[in-house]
Amino acid sequence: MEKRKIRVLMAKVGLDGHDRGAKFVAHVLKNAGMEVIYTGIRQTPDQVVNTALQEDVDVVGLSFLSGDHMVLVPKIMERLKEKGKGNTMVLVGGIVL
Image (spheres, rainbow, N blue to C red):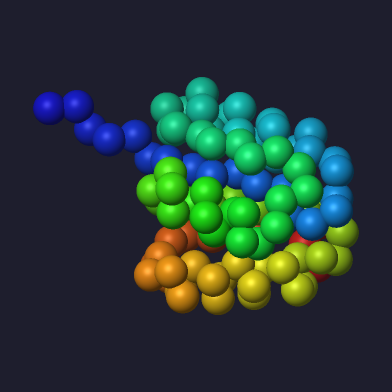
């Protein structure tokens, strides 16, 4: 029986268009044997949550190079809880103060 790969959703939320770091992390995770779904830039919290549900991911990775994480991460966390995925691991990187 083949073990299921860890499924990771990588997303850039908000208006930040700098995605080099997120793409690099996605590449490293893929090389480590994980299945990575990269949504691209300028995603809304609802788009991220809907994709996380559709793809049945184990981890949501978010990358920010602005202060938007202070508003957008709580929205994503709340929507994940509302949709029954509140136990999903959410990792945030970039310029997070």
